[in-house]
Image (tube, rainbow, N blue to C red; front, side):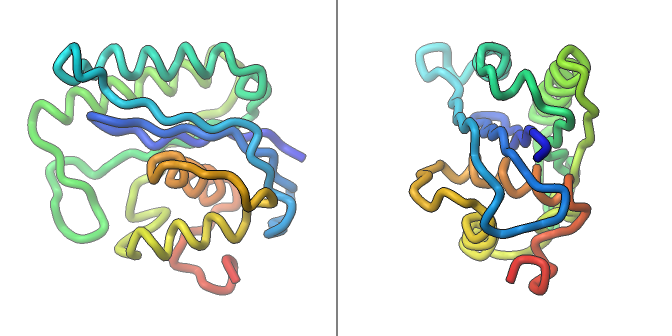
Length: 173
């Protein structure tokens, strides 16, 4: 089994998960070791810097995350807005780029590889409920209750590790 980390970066909310995955995809053997969702603190008017620092500190203290050999993070297509890519305002581009830099730095610090996965690469235009259903179909523990960002982080990690995407119905069957 291999330990991987997935991160769904966002401007106001981020999700992360640590998964134990078999080398060959097996829908009943992917185990969630750790999951986290962080929102920007409303008391600081959505302070995006504090949010990503908080997530990095939680991952640093999570024993499971320290053993990850690969880190996969969502990298939105900036300024797009077409289906299958996120739209970001000019200020959001700076925030998201900063978040990705923090995630890449974290990966380097734990000795893991880092790969940015574009939205179009892992889920394209699939509806969220389809994506989350396919992610849940691969998790061994069906009792895990995650937010949408943490489920997305699981999907990003599995798509990156297995070099596939959510649009491949035979893989997720």
